[in-house]
Figure (cartoon, rainbow, N blue to C red):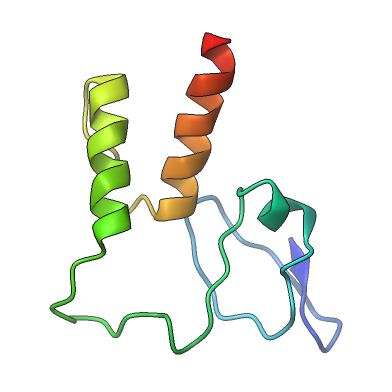
Length: 91
């Protein structure tokens, strides 16, 4: 759950993205890389031909760790979270 610049509470489900107005760079989840923020200019239009190299790399890393591909809708934040959780368990 986050609070936007108008004071409205917005609930975000894991792996879900929603447009939310406000400055979240100091949000605890952003600092722990559990929540990813992007500006409207950074978001890709649906159907775009650009390949997100970071997402591809995270998907490959996830598959090499867990032996199966991640869910098709898993975003970068969710993949980072799962990989980090695995790393913490390895220590």
